[in-house]
Image (cartoon, rainbow, N blue to C red):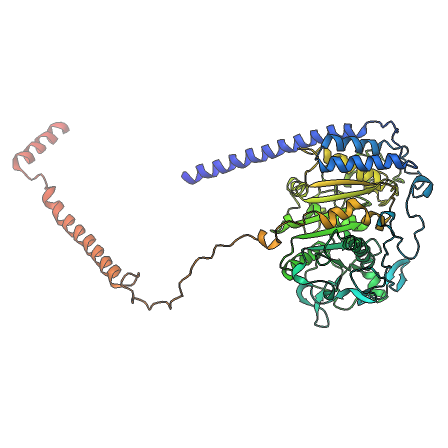
Length: 566
């Protein structure tokens, strides 16, 4: 009976729990529908930035001040003004990447031109790596074992290695390659001769663009860092750089993938996809690789206090999506994520700003716009890396509490990701990014206090100009410098004193064990007591309950019985 009552209570509890969850879901859907109306409003197109340096500078300044002051209303205002830009919502609008429209550094050539605000400081040229064509796509024949500094005025001597290719430190699995070697993720990292290990406080892990050119992006961040060092803004040994080399099957065919290198299929590395090779019983995701890199640097540098994941374009897509679904770790408060001009986003709500895109070319994907990598609403579509794939509310809360910096070029009206689901987020890098910022402004509590938005004036989809922007270098290299070492965040474990183990006693050796004399004597005593009670009771009942053998009583019973029969 008691068990039945407990089961009934459990069933009632589950019923009310499920009902409450469904009610919450209905509330969220209603809120999302209301936000769709907010997105649908018509813009007046009175805030043109093309060819208007003053307007771009104004927007950049307003966004910077609003982010610094955590002023959601002011931030919402400047975002709306950017979205009001004439023809921003036209998918057929021509590129704004023109000098006549205010773009800087339009003479981009073989070497990276230095940005004007660096006052002629030299730039280290992008390393040359042998390309190939495989199945009509760019691939790489091999990876340089080191990347040299080629110019003067840098903290690294000319013609000395600034970076080395680490092919041994990052074992991604206990399994071995077909040749019996450890399976590794190769990555570029600052050469150990260029810093004092005990002085390193920050590691910037930069992700590549679509061409998987890790050497290019780590060099771009190197140029930005070197200006800060030259300008005495950043100590020489405080920040080092690293870049995972995410290769794919085309690179394997072209020759860059060694037999024990981890590699991926196409661009799946940007979405947290599983490895394509070498053959393993359990594949490894690119986001697991990023976790392992962070843990490697925490172990390597005792005074490390900040780890920054930075990406532009496809690298920004990878960083944003990693920030959204990253599994929680004890060191997460020390992580920062910089996202510059991504082609699309992992949206964290179920609504979309561009409800009726006009450039789908007959495609239909409305039922998939909330699935990964464009949303977090379909648990089955999430990468295997994600532990809480069925709990979008939890994923969203974690993301909103992370340290995230966004940089959007005010002239970046390129289409970026042309997939169907991306069009529901907007038509260009700038529009999608601004819509995402607008959505963040509508979060409970307003724009997250740990997130910052920077609009970069005069820049389109230019990687170095975005990376070298003052707002970017401030977030990537400067913020959080006084934070305590990451090691101080590690949870303290309570160590209890454990006595030395003793050999188990033989049976009966302990007088108080189950087979010892105390329990044995007690058992015999109980048995004897029960036997005595039974014997006494058997014989005692005869005397306590005697038969009614009195003669008078017997005669009366006989008389009464005969009378009843008559």
